[in-house]
Structures are given as structure tokens and as C-alpha cells.
Image (cartoon, rainbow, N blue to C red):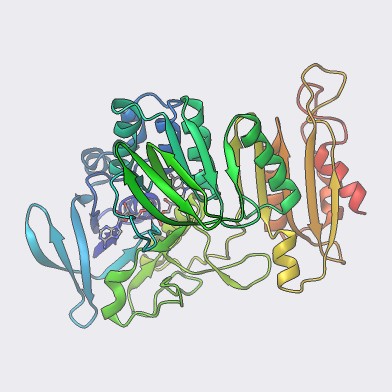
Length: 443
Ligand code: FAD
């Protein structure tokens, strides 16, 4: 059996490893447009910010190691530019071999999503960077380190924008973050996001909210951004992080069913509308696990899980993907924010009846040194089913959200949260864990 994988990072690499485990004989070919496979996308901001010092640590697998360990035929700098379902072949444009066709028995698509680059005047400036892969990272690092950039404008207050603002600030740049909406970090409701915004400001990041950049002009060694509020800001570098769009242009001619924004439509077995072609990761439309609507959630956990499931189904196992709940987490200087499931804005927009409770317990027993406050917001249905949660604090935020994420996955209720028996000794928690406390308050 010959299986082609398009995209060699999160979803693609997971699919390849799982396929090999399930089928020792399969000929597995992995096509990757870039020079690198299986790199740590999520680590890129921290390498730019010097928390990760060694560039080679970002390269989780090399093509050679992938070949040695899993016998995968890895072809880097090889872009799949078309698929012909009638002849069951793909068209590849390779740096080394030019254009050629490769036949398949099955294909797993994991092409991901690319940063949006709006068509604004001056957008072609080489001082405007987006961040997706290793070459982008190298360019930003060069600009910051070799050219000693001392100021940055970050456009977009999503996860990547906030992480870049933090990391550039950590290495001493003057940073201004411009956000088009009234709040940063959309997975959070306004009051939780406000705490994270304040942490940015307390660490010297200037925030400009509810305004957009309308054009850029180069001025000597700097770039100027002009905003909708008629501000003019100058900096050495601009990081553009206003969101991503699925990297699916090469599928347009195939007749494959795509959603309104170009996401690949898949079944619960991650089959596309074309037989023997599966798709996973940032490029696909998924079901929201909490409210059943169609959505797209570009996160590494779902991409990896889907890669594994698509491989199962290529091998006939019939595994299903049951939806994404958007569990996510971010470090903002000393604070951590984490969220899972639906937030209040989403529930209101969809008209889903819900109750809210907010608690501010300590991260662990207050008599043991180092306890810090933690805010947990819990959203649940009138029948008690947990719909979502957000937490912000200095310590122990991750495990609280993970507990609640787990209960949501099992369609659990507030009562289930009260019954969770969680690890406790004074340095770690309280006899009534903050998650229990949130649930007691809700009952
Ligand atoms: P990708 O990992 O993007 O891989 C797709 C690959 O396919 C790309 O390398 C691309 O070059 C290749 N490709 C595309 N089209 C073709 C083609 N036609 N032919 C050949 N190759 C092709 N998620 C989290 O959950 N937590 C985090 O902390 C986090 N931090 C992030 C930080 C940054 C800076 C970035 C960019 C992303 C971050 N993410 C994070 C998101 C996470 O990385 C993605 O959700 C995940 O990588 C998606 O996996 P994927 O396989 O769908 O796409």
C-alpha cells in the first residue's frame, strides 16, 4: 500500500508515525514544501525570546531520523501542487527533481494554515514579518539580533501576537501591540482577558485597542504603521499576527468540498469528499465538541490527534474524531491564562442557556508559603452540564483547566466537578481544590 502525506509537521508527522506502527509494509511518502519537517511551531516565539537558546532543539525530527526510525520516505522542499483523483496521483513540484507525478492508494492532507497578510499599502516591506515556520523565525531572529532592532509593533492580540509581544519585550525591545477588537485573546471573556492585558502593560507593552493598521511606509531604517485612529507609530520591525487561513489553494481544482473560508470538509473519520483522501489539522473544519456547530480550531493537540485517527482509518480501523473543545493556555509574563470549551460570548451568540460562576481561591493552602490567587470562571447548563471554563493566575492554572477539560470531554456536570478527588498536600492545593470550590459555588 502506498500512502502519501502532504505536510510534515504536527498532523503529518503524527500520521506518518502511526501509519508505520500499524503497517510495517506500507510505502509512506511525506511531502513538505519547506526544508524542515516536524519542528516545534509552538516553541518558535520562545526561541526568538531566548528562553530556548539552542535552535537545534526546535527540530524535533530530521528527515534522516524520520527515515531511520520509521522508514518514511521524506521529501522536503517538495510541494504538492495538485491532486488528480481520477488517476489517483498527485503532482509534486520539487526543488531537486522538478515536477513529477506520484501515484497513491491513500492520501493524508495536513497542509496547515498560513498567516493572513492583508492587502494594505506598504505590506510588501521586508520589515513586516509573519511567524509560522523555521525560515520565518530565522528572519525575525536575524532582524532582532544581528540588526539589533530595539522596537517592535505587533499587530494582532491572539495567542501568537501576545506570545511575540512578551518574548520581544523579554529581550528588551520597546513593544506596541495593536488589536482591532475591544479585547485581546478571543478564547477568554473580557474580564479574564483584561487581567492578562494588564499584565502585558505592567511589563511595559503598550496596548492600542480597537484600532487597525491601515497602511505602512518605510522611513530610513524603520517602518511606520498608520492606524485607523490616525496614529503614526514607528518601529524597527513589525510582527503581523492577525490570524490564519487554511493552506488549501492547491485543492481548488480537485473538486474537493471546501468550507466558506477554504477549510477542508471532513467526516468524523476525517475522510474528505474524495475517496481515499483524508485531511487533518489546521486546514480542516471540525465540530465544536460543546455546541456541535462547525468551527475551525488551529491548535497542536487536535492536529496531532487527528493525524493519528486518519492513519487508523487508512488502515481500516474506523476510529472517529469527536470534535475539538479548544483547550488552550498562554503564559503572559508571570501570569498564566487557560481556557476550555465555550466562553460566555460564544454561548450568548448561539443563544445557549447557561449559568456562570466565578471564584478566586488560592492556588494552594494559604498557610503554606507562596500561595497566589487564582480566578476560575465556570460556565454550565441549567442541568449542570459543564460548557466551558477559563482560569487566570500565577500558579496551578494549567491543572485546573485540564481537570475541567477532562470533565467536559466526558459530558460531565458541576456535580461531577464537586466529586473529583484531586491530589492534595499544602504545597500543591487545598483539601477543597479550586476546581471543587468553583463547582460548590455553582451548585
Ligand atoms: P502545520 O504544523 O502548519 O504543518 C503543515 C505543513 O504542511 C507546513 O510545514 C507546510 O509547509 C506544509 N505544506 C502546506 N501545503 C503543502 C503542500 N501543498 N505541499 C507540501 N507541503 C505543504 N498550538 C498549540 O496548541 N499551542 C501552542 O502553544 C501553539 N503555539 C504556536 C506558535 C506558533 C508561532 C505557531 C505558528 C503555531 C502555534 N500553534 C500552537 C499552532 C500549531 O502549531 C498548529 O495548530 C499545528 O502545527 C497544526 O498542524 P498542521 O499539521 O495542521 O499544520
